[in-house]
Image 1: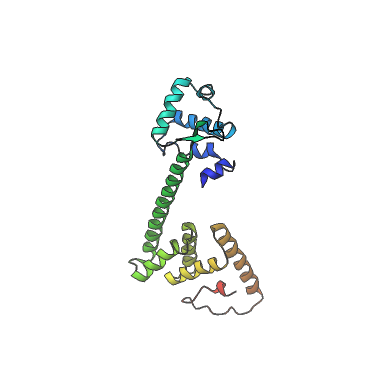
Image 2: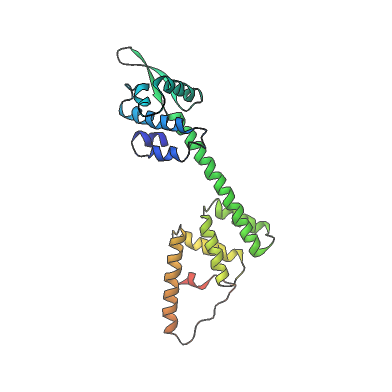
Length: 225
């Protein structure tokens, strides 16, 4: 959980909230308040005051208190009653609800981004092949769900197919599966592998008087190196 990472000082909370606070329904004043509160909760969880926060803001401690109440009511901050070892009751404050909102928001953004990328890939392939068969659609769907191929990696495989002047979903599938077998996950890794192969192929070609015939309907030849 992000909250646990934050408690262990393993998360850049300020930057994370800075890039998302507007999307979470917070304004600039609330962002600053939460950043200051988060620091106090880590450094002195049981002894902070609104006056300490207001010294770093343009509002007084009374308005900081109102801001705090608003954030509690809107479930960015939680307040719970606790009892210490001497039986004395005290209130414990936590920003764990804020992290829960952050995690849900980031997951939703990731899902939306993946959906947009899938639509882009389908449109790109339809431009290459026209109307797709149900089997082709299922194959492309599996690339992006079961195999979790990055969208840019799929685009590179399509470009590689075009470089061989071959039009085949199966051809793209074999390229991607070979990269998966070789644990290639990024475009940069795939490009390095392609360059290395072509350099070896060019070197081998200079020592041979006759290049072997390649069936363009088969798997692209560098995969059988």
